[in-house]
Structures are given as C-alpha cells and as structure tokens.
Length: 77
Image (cartoon, rainbow, N blue to C red; front, side):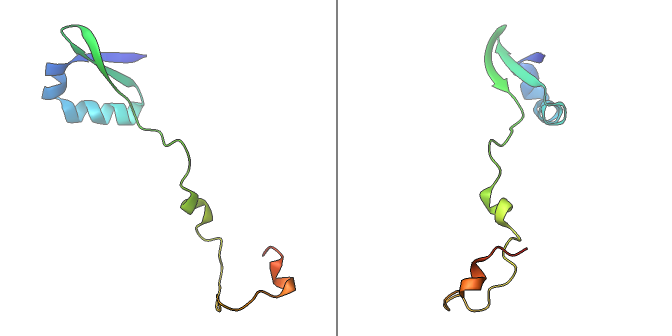
C-alpha cells in the first residue's frame, strides 16, 4: 500500500517522511493539487557489489611477478 501526501506537507515534514519510507519500505506518492506527480520509495540495490563478494578471498600473495607452479592452480581450501 502507498501513502499520499501533498507537496506542501512534504516540504514541511520532509525528513520525517524520508525516515518513514526508509524504515517501513512503504511507497509515498507526492501529489500536486490532488494529482500524483512523484513517487518516493526505498532504494534497493539491484546487484551486490562484486568487490564485496571477492573481499577476503585472497589469503596471501608474496611474489606476484613469479610464475605459479603446477600444483598452485588448485583452489585453496
């Protein structure tokens, strides 16, 4: 369900409305003379940050310019 609020009410209580949308996840429709003109909703990231998925996966790499031995290609585990 979505709430509706006029532009003037949004202007007067913007931070309170922002916090409510952030906490509840409920959509807020902003109206101008009763006509919907904007939609305010909580941001949901679409994909996880690939750097976060890799963070901590490399344990130690002392000599990055040296070739990797044949047995070094196996996954650490």
